[in-house]
Image (cartoon, rainbow, N blue to C red; front, side):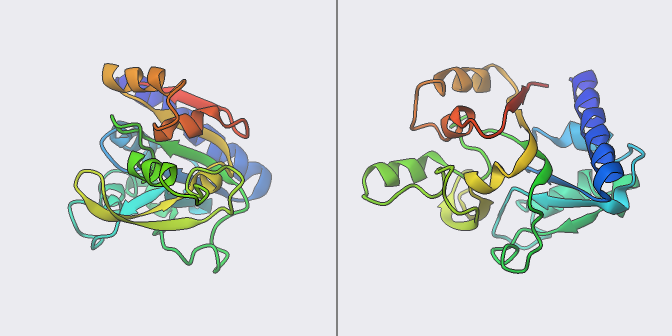
Length: 215
């Protein structure tokens, strides 16, 4: 696990620095949860021009930033320190789009996946709701308007959430998906055909290749 996490962190750092060298800025979107913590612990010490890196969360729980359930707190504990504390972190909010705080395309998106096949805060319940309604599924529709959405209480712990939708997630040059353990590998296998698993819609799109990693 340690060597793989270190390798992924080094790859992310290299991509960010290359982007900075070419464009003067870079962006990194990350998930919360336990999956990326080892990567964060290596990444925060990598020597790149962090003051040119903008960091965003792909999703968060709608709780106070100091809450134990906050992804902001997780980032401050594990990523936004050492060299990476020089980066520019912007908390996720629904007005980031209207305020033009989101880049046209993200440099790297680091995603995790739950045992229920959810990624970001896009859960199976959303697909069930869509199956039973006449509405288009804007959370999972690749041609939908890129947006940041809020949800009712979902997941574990069951709390209201905020999340990028799939079409915004796909505005990325690189997408790395962490799927640690046999159970998640089995979910990936099921997602080859099961449209009721949220991860199916990420894997089956053809806009951005998905780099699947297991620590």
